[in-house]
Each structure stands twice: as C-alpha cells, then as structure tokens.
Amino acid sequence: MRRLLSFPIILAACATLSTPLHAQGLRDDINQLFIFGNGDDPLFLGGSGSNPSQAIAIHGAHFEPSAVSQNGTMIDFLTNAIGGNVADFPFSAASGGTTFKFENGVPVATSTSAGPVFAERGQTLGRGRVLVGLSYDTFHYSSIRGVDLHNINLVFTHQNVTGAKCDSIFGTSCTPMGVPSFENDIMPFQLSLDIKTSVESFVLTYGVSDRLDIGVAIPMVSTSLVGQSTATIIPFGGDSVYHYFAGTPTNPVLSASRFVQGSATGIGDVAVRAKLNVHNSDRSSVALLLDGRFPTGSQDDLLGAGKFSGRALAVVSGSFGAFSPHADVGYLRRAGNYRNDAILATFGFDHLMSTGVTLDADMIAQFQVGNSKLLIPQSVTYTEPFQRTVNTSDIPNIRDDLINGSLGAKFTLRGGLTAIANVIVPLNRGGLRANELYTVGLEYGF
Image 1 (cartoon, one colour):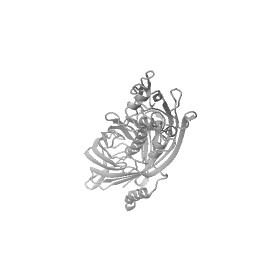
Image 2: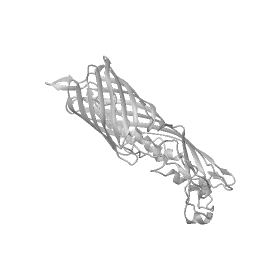
Image 3: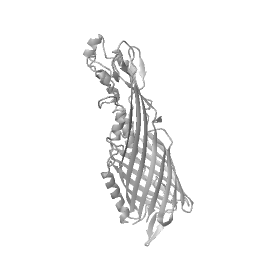
Image 4: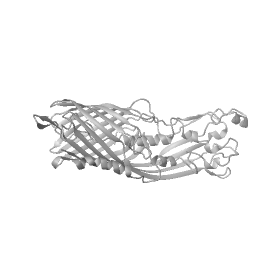
C-alpha cells in the first residue's frame, strides 16, 4: 500500500527534475513557422525591411498587423487549441471495479459490472476501499474545425497604411484599403502540422465513507511536433516590387519556407476529485462529482492549459440485472482568455457480457458556452482599384462543440485486477481532433 501511494510523489518528482528535449518550448517552435529570415517578429520581411529609403518607411513590417489581428495571432489560436485539448483529456472513472457498502459490518457489493471506462456512475467505492489505476493513451491530431492539419491554408494581407504622410506622397487619401496600390499585395501561406501526444496517467481513489470518494489523477504527457510552412508573396502589379523575403526590388525572392521539429515530456495538469453519493438503491444511484484541474503542465511545451479548470457533474446510474445505464450532466468552468466554458453531457451503458467481461459504450459531449474565444481573423475587403474580398483562412469560425463516441471493455482478472481497452472517435468536426484516441490500462481495487 505504501508503495502504491508513493508512486504519484515519485512521478511528480521525476517530472520536476526532467529537462526539455529541446532548447525552446513547442509554442516557440510553432511561432518559428511564421518567421522568415532574421528577427523574432512573425511575417517580418527581411528583404523589404533592408531598404529604409523606400517611400513608406520600412515595408518589411507591413504584414505583421495581419498576423496579430483579432484576439491574438494565428499562432495563439493553434497553441491554445492544442494546450487546452491536452488539459481536457479524460481520466478514467473515479470509482471503477466492484463497489461495496457495509451492512452490519459485512461488505455488500453495490454494482454488477466493472463500470464504465471514462463516464461516471452513481455508486462509490465503499468505506476504506482503494482504487489504483494506470493507463496509457495515445492520439495523433488530424484536424482543426474539420480542416486537415497537414494542409492549412492562410492568406495574410497588407496593413492599411494611412496618415498625412501617405496622403502627401501619393496625392490622394490612403484611407481606402488598396491605396497605395502595394496594399493589394497578399501572402498565401500553407501550414502543415504533425502533432502526436501520449498520456500516462496514475489515478488513485479512496473511499472515505460508504458515500464519499476522494481521488487524484496525475498525467505524464509527451508531445512531439513536426511542422512545415511555405509562404509566397503575390505582388499586385506595377513597376516596383515592394515586398520580398530576400534579394532586391529588381531580383526579389518571393517565396520562403520553414521546417521545425521538437518534443517535450513532463507532468500535465493534475486533477483532484470528490464524489458524493446522495441516493443508492437496488435499481438506481445518484451522485455529485467535483473535479478541479490545476495548471501544473507547462503551457510553453503544450503539456497543459496554463489555467485552472473545474467541473461539477450530476451522475445518475441504473441497474437492471447485467445492464447498467448511466448519465452525467454538468458544467465545465475554464479560466483564461481563450477558453470557453462548456456544458457537459455523457450518456451510455455498461453491460456485463459474461463473467469478468464488461462492455462500455458512451456518447461524450462538450457544448461550448457563448461565442468562441478562439477566433480566426475575418476576411479583408479591398475597395481600390476595385472591390473584392480576400478570405484569410480555410479554418471556419464555428462553435467548438465536441461530440465523441467511446467504446471499450473491462476484463476482470484475478486478485482484484481489471484490464481496460477503449477507443474514442469524433462524431463531429468542432475543435482540434484526433481520428482515434486509444486507451489501455489496469485498475486494482482493494
């Protein structure tokens, strides 16, 4: 028992002492995909900026406002989506395996099956009982809001240059978008991201009484990133080329590319949980669950969200012989400027198929509260020399509702040991998604 309880302490210590596998954070690696040439500013054009004698100050910085418009940059959008997704990773159920209560000092089972994998059920472990779980989860991000992560297309537009100096040089008002004419230059940008994540979780739950469980979940997260970007400047026309990555106005370099790769391993966002059973009978059980996730994972390395989140759930489960339906409904509160709260809903069942084999099937959903805080820059409308609209991204501004299907099985082995296998697949296109999320694990109750 002492060895089991010391495991999370050892895990946390190893994560604290470990060093990153790269010189900078993965957030910085993604940032590098938007930087061409020398400097630290996204979309700064080194070639254009090298000639300050040109008419309108330094042209090298003219695409930068396009990178930082609308609630932060495209970089912020991608990195906050990744970090927030890892932080919301589902831990295994707080009260798995066989649950008990004491009657006249004798333990009496309150469940038939081994319970759901990720959903919760109304029963608690029972006074003095302990559940220890170890799991390994792996997933490969494939899309963001339905767009293939290997083929994200963006278009960065020029700053709308205005002011008295511009008006005097060109002899007309520079207020309309498209005046001066070089404002019509655009930068199509293709981005490819390959992101893999694995999570090794330690879960410990203790039955304080027949109706109250408390627990902790400690994840060790590994994230690897391979990214490539290609940018091309398309001049609108005219006698001079004002924007280029390198070279000269007469011999400009109009395309550039970047390649980055990196990885990081460390402790993720630790969760502390408590579940209170408020009703229990032979046919039904009702509980309330509180879960708080603390920002212990590195936000810079995309191992955590960097902000606290907490959820409150009402849990209802039934028992009809070997068939046990369950439903969890609640609210997820997320701190931070780029994370929406969510309504939580999970519906499904676990069914004792045969002795020692439990099938679990669930629909797991998060419904975004309010307008999305992760916004893609809006389209840009030009009025000169003719009216037209440029869409800045093929990523849509849609709600990040997440609906997943989960199918798994629990195999009860000898000595209170239970093996777990599960797969989660997305059922809609909102948010940052993997095609599949695979889970294998072990639970031990005593």
